[in-house]
Length: 286
Ligand code: SF4
Image (tube, rainbow, N blue to C red; front, top):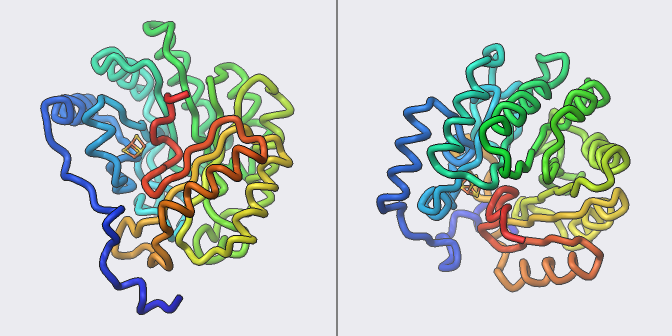
């Protein structure tokens, strides 16, 4: 497919209603009042209307400035601020006010911190748990490329219900989409997590529509199963900002259904595969 073809109109299956309703406003007001960042807004997630109307949001810790420069992502790049010690308590308050039972926490990549930011993940979990004993956490962590062992050591003090790390795309497209990362490093992180904590499900996600071939997608699924990754999310890449990579293809929902079925046959225990799937989308649904 040529670059010109991508300028065609959004297919019907990718049109969504605008966010509205009391619950949406309540979620939005609470997040704003507590000064919490979300990946929902920072990444211009197309599901924000749906998720926030159900009182669900994915918190983005460690600020909203990332030390990497991934071209699929709209999060601001630059020099981040030091971790905010008030953040864990503010997130605890959020879970109380929104009565959150399942919280997905992610962060920008913090290559500037000696533990990659792992201590902030730990502190958020432990602080929230003090007042919300039943809550389940799903972490979506960066690759901790310079500090994997140290980061995992820190995380061992606050294990989540699910630990995710996204490989995001097929290895051939890393140079274009995820230039500061390395596919094998991401796989090794998932492998190490599973070996350390076999009872903690691991999860990964890839975006389709960046120009990957079917063979490449299948190979990624095989690689993920080879490191015993348990959960898989597959969604359509949508250009989140004018500086982001162009969409190469709008993948038909039937193709997502095909990948979803194949993934289940391959042994993933939890699979979500649809154009609007994101790694945190309906993460609580078993
Ligand atoms: S899918 Fe995830 S990132 Fe998107 S709006 Fe829902 S919770 Fe936020």
